[in-house]
Image (cartoon, one colour):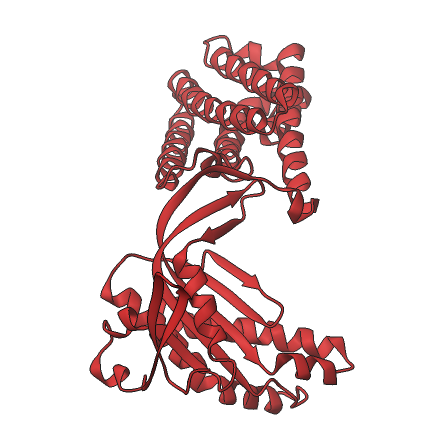
Length: 372
């Protein structure tokens, strides 16, 4: 869109075509690089861990060349500024052509992929021609029209792709890319007595307000131990609670911080509901929460719309742990996790049983309250 604006300015007032091109072209490149990595979901399709580094490398490169081309233009060295801008633009649209081509090929839409790639190739040719010494070429009608057409085509393609993902039903999405094995911390928070609570309520708005407040409070307590920048990769509403998953390293701090979050939720729930009462939210809440925490390996699965989900023992065990708090609330972890905790925290887990998954798979667990 920025190149289209530049072309329009050039066609109306040729005197300012150079100004519009040098100021808007770098912005155009930055936006398209971001679109290539986020709107096309090429990172998820490739399934390569650490692909974010490629995004930042290309983005920094494009921004740096754009700033350099503007500086050269301001210093009166247009003959050097044009090739610099062309290099950044060519890198941008090669990346965009690759991202769109891979996406549409994977989604069995070869025609859309071909249109997008051709539009990128035309844009690349335009950038190379724009770097030539003959400045008058940039103001020719075919050059202006080709710029408007290709950039509008690419912009509308990205808008259509994003809209299709956002407005499609979740069950229509397939899992794409290669599953990636990652180390995760899994937190299940379940409301005890939620069925009877929901049955008593005749105002759905109250349920919505409470669940939104609960979600916000859980994230705040997690940020207290993991930091505000450490956001969960997955937050899933389960009808009577939440599932949260973080991708964290296999360290003692991961175990201790994960358990600390669970204990903070267990200890602070009554205070949280009291704050809602003081905020004039009707004081009829589920009486307790149950928390299950486990840490371990899981497979990261990515859907076509970019949403992530996780499959693995850590997820399954955390769910089973919180299910064992059904009678008394509290928190349950595995004995393996318990052994990583400081002695003062270990003393809070006084109720030990064995969770039988199968005849060959038994997990010793411990809880802060009697386990069902």
